[in-house]
Length: 205
Image (cartoon, rainbow, N blue to C red; front, side, top):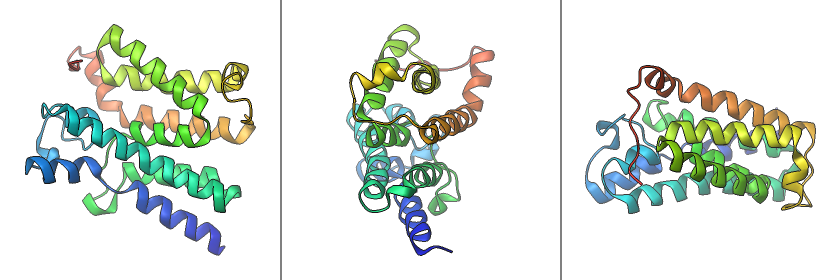
């Protein structure tokens, strides 16, 4: 196996697998976030503790690990950037430290987007805020924003290039964004079921 491939795989997975939501709530609240709300270790569930600062902190660090993994790869292993992005994302979803039961990947995906193109990151945040203000349901916002990023990248890349003119929207990024969309739909399968049953909880803004 190529040593660079192995190296990128290892640091990307290790960064992605850091369960910041679990660590932060254990440090500051002395409780296991897996016993709160949905049991998820991500930002939305941390918000259910009533501590907005801890939720924002979780969002920041979960995004940072995606951003850091891809940025390192851009600087030193440019041919393996998309591998790094995918493995970091999968590390968040399936962290070895907590029996491969991780978060839903949205914050880590956001960090990856900003590392690839700040235009895509801004598009995601803008869409997420607008949809959240309308529906006040995090899962709808996350899935719709991910879909929006994919559609704009595939069909309206000129919109992003006006903000981020130096970015090249080649086939590889379109493929990886499609994979991320499928994975985020997969991680939100329970939310989709709840939406069908009209039992999905709204978030307090």
